[in-house]
Amino acid sequence: MVGVFSNSGSADFEVPGFSIFNPLVGYSRTYLDNDKRMGDFCNSNCVSGGGEEMKVIFDVDGVLANFSKGFHELTKKMYPKWEPLYPPNEAPFWDDYCAPLEPNKESEVWNAIKKSPSFWKMLEPLATDEEFGCIERLSYQCEVYFATHRVGTAVKEQTEIWLQRQGILRNTVIVTPLKGQVADAIKATHLIDDKAGNAIYTAYHSPSTKSYILDKPYNRFDHRIVGRRVIRVGNVAEFFSHLRQEKDWRE
Image (cartoon, rainbow, N blue to C red; front, side, top):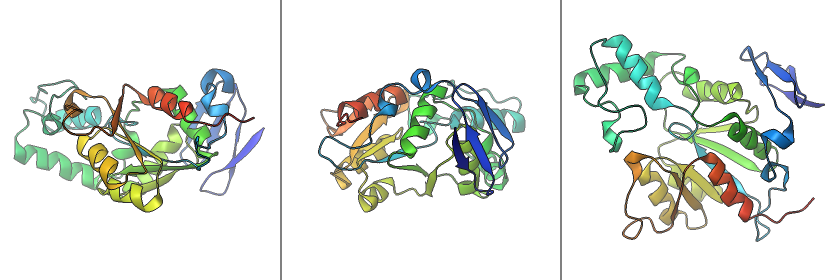
């Protein structure tokens, strides 16, 4: 049995096949057996093929959290007659996530988000339980960061609570729009994002960082023209498969 201490100072306990209760967020989550939940990668040492310790940055919204759906739901509450032109996460262009919402109404929705003490921590997850399980295990093996450009009330705390609710009890959240600069500053080895600009900029601004983009309709571009250094993956599990291929497998 492994004891894990929450930010409140009280201990949570993780037992494979059982559930844990985090008193900080009042949230109970069932954990599956490690072999079923995490796979081979999560049982490996977190050392790259060159002997370098991994430092991994995860974008939050659009990769782990379903911001688009949360924005749609809030917009619908504020403007019941509004109907989205595209389903959540399916817009063909980045700025069409709330089309055809008028600019003044879009601003009002964002104002509501900024004032909310709970919008960010109540978003539905995009990643699977198994993927969150791998991230949690990874956070005990090497440096894992969660970079987000969220705005509003206590966004860092809201994000930390949200991650804890997904079972990631150890999390380092960085609130910044400058993900490429952050990757370069901390000498990140890997980054995964859903915004094409972030992935491309990181690949060139921080050459030591392998930059990955989570494939979405709104972030597709010709890799032959821009972003040759950016690696496109279909989901977080595929991202872990790439990490796995780079590992020194040591018991």
